[in-house]
Length: 359
Image (cartoon, rainbow, N blue to C red; front, side):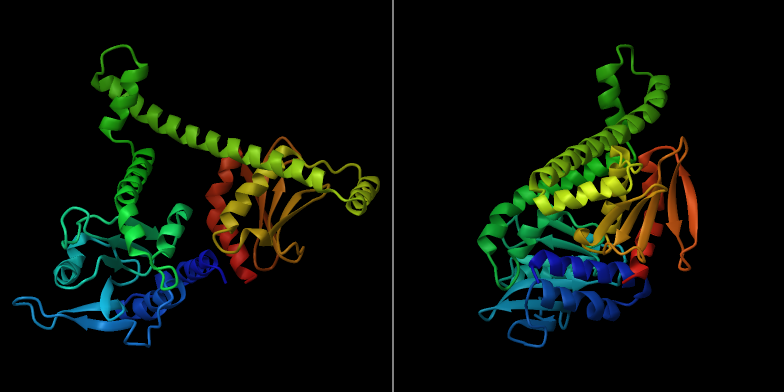
């Protein structure tokens, strides 16, 4: 299994079990030890590789422990401190990491609750752990751009120099992306003023600020939606073109036979866009190649494993009013009216639950 696939598998486990695990010990057993072993590739039962409850007395602080120390060639390389599953991670929780970082050879310190992983180093001052992480990995929402950097910490590909050299850029790019995300969700006064003063020619008064508070939020959301839709359309057109190029004589004959059998079925671009949204949501539970589609006269079906006994959703887009059809455990369908394709995201939990039922 490839590195990214192992990461996805652990992410699925975290997604399914996180809310049921409330203690630090349970978090270690369910999520942290599997991360160390299956993702980073270290043997958690070999004390030459992983030392649990690692102790290194510091000044007047005697007997304090860090949850795990990962060793290489007899030296501490990575320190890991754990908190209960789904608990918030704050720098105040990392007091042992700060102290141990300065008295060991470790260049990487990790604070985690099993779902979110904060990776620290010493960019600001030598041998002193930074107060802000250079890499934040959220297993519930994995940033694919971070996967190659994370792989550099694995036993097989360990490359400390490359990690440290890239850490500063990772730190600030990651922080900027998170801040942009915050501003898109809840625009601050500074963010609103920044844009308002570039499009509004009058004085920036309290009334103008109130007016643009809603407008800036609406504009940013529409901008994101349009960018996503543009990329979906580009990908769909490219995929359709590729399928046309790759058609072999035998598959072309099958396609012709299908057309002869039922000429009233017309797959629209809107249905394909809706399918891509459902697929993107379902990919939080299974691999994307397992999500398939079949069109019919009545509806456009999204299936797991191309099996009509495993329906994920149905798109009823043939009439003036569009509906998203979702099926319960008894395969009873409920149609939800949608005004636009983005409304599908409001049913993301139900879509993921449908996929999980077939697992």
